[in-house]
Amino acid sequence: MAAEFSHEMPLRHVLIPVDESPASLKVFEYTLSDLYKKGDTIHLFHCIPPGRHVMMSPDLGMEEVVEDDEETRKKVESHAREFLLKTFVPRLDELKIPYQIEIVRFGTDADSVGTVICERADQLNAGLVVMAKHNKGAIKEFFIGSSTNYCTHHCKSPILVLHCDA
Image (cartoon, rainbow, N blue to C red; front, top):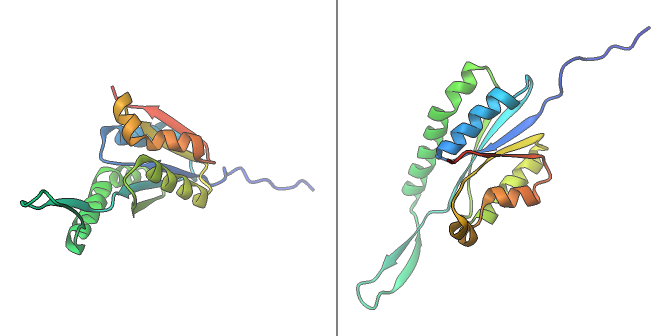
């Protein structure tokens, strides 16, 4: 008696870190058209930097770092959620692709955002992380870094980097 084999492909978690840049939309569309396989789950991952602003005193130019209030935090999170739902979800629903939206509030430097992306990829046991390479220029990248660069050096999951900026 012959053994039965399943012909279905195993489920794969595909992590796509997104922001409001045109490059994120290009990565998303490329993933759906060229990388997605039936049975995959798409994870849209968006980082919100912690809310801070600097207050200057008119006397002596004193500075103070103040966290945003709860109302401002809720507005920022609501904006991010609405952006993701409006920009990405209709296409996923149209194609009947399973997805998960994840919005996290985390540090603002590229290494810390990269760390969160790598940690999430590990938690998911992601079969693939698809990211955009933003051409910030050498000086800007030197000072603020690149989360894509961080992930290519530290993520255990396979990384596909798309050069989207003209």
